[in-house]
Length: 152
Image 1 (spheres, rainbow, N blue to C red):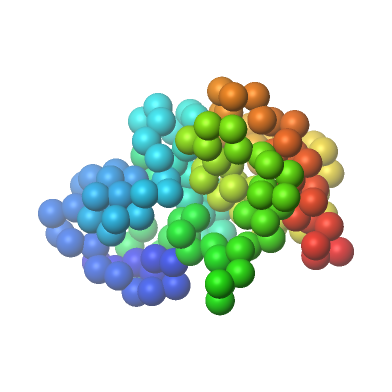
Image 2: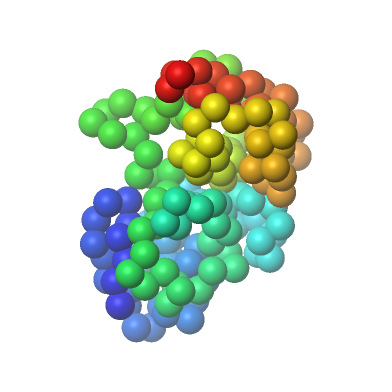
């Protein structure tokens, strides 16, 4: 079994196929950006992008991504330059504790990939379920709008 992980073809070992994708990413591939939060797909800390869709890695089996493209926060920067969403996060000092931020960023990237000029309702719908207990939601929305400006 194989997947494309951050642009590289990678093998899913047979003893990992029934494990959550989150565990495969963190423990087998060493990608610690996606975080374990609730374990039931409600908080969004584990969000990755699978074939263009923001997906909760904690409730996705590793076997379910066979042949698919999985992107984690580690795969966003290209050529030493941050992704425009990552840069907007820094420009607006979005993170506070930072625990949820990788999942927030991945949900925002998936949104902007599908809706380059999102309205407030688009942002609210895309980010619904990505929880930030520190209360950075207003800065998150502002960063998404800032990142969207870069493609207009």
